[in-house]
Length: 144
Image 1 (cartoon, one colour):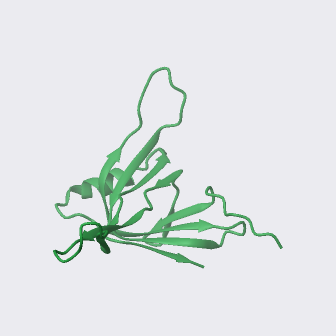
Image 2 (cartoon, rainbow, N blue to C red; image 1 turned 90 degrees about the horizontal axis):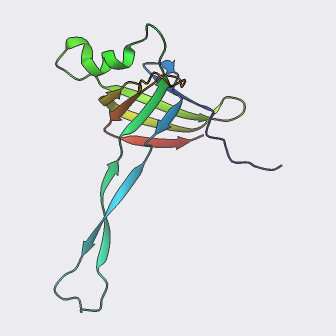
Image 3 (cartoon, rainbow, N blue to C red; image 1 turned 30 degrees about the vertical axis):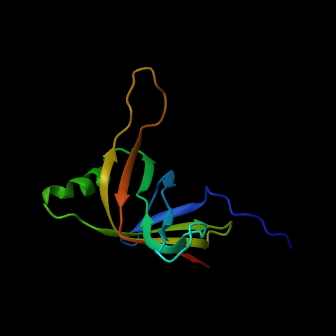
C-alpha cells in the first residue's frame, strides 16, 4: 500500500471548543537558537562549541473571508473595552481524507497583536479578507 503526503488544504482551527473557518494559516514555526562558546584554553584553530539556547516561536497569522455581522476578531482585539488581554488556547489540526487529525498544533495563551481589514478598491472583484496576527506563549506538535 502506497503512502502519500497529506495535502495542506484540509485543516481546521478551533478555540473554546468551537471550529473557526480560516482560509490561510501561517507561522507554525519554532527555532532553537544556537549559542557559540569559546574559552581561553582553546587553540586558535579549534572551532567554537555550540550549545542549544532559547526556544523561539513566531507569531501566527490567520486569514479568512469577511462575513456579514461577524466582528469577533475585532472584538477580541479590542477586548470589548476591557483593559486586560483575553488569551485563548488554539488547536490547529491537519486532517487526512477521512477528516481525522494527522498532526495537531496546540497554541498556548494566544492573544491578538494585529488585526487587518481588507484592502478596498473600486475596481477590484476579490473577496474581502481579514487577518489576525497572534502572539503566543508556546507551540506543541503532536502526530497521531
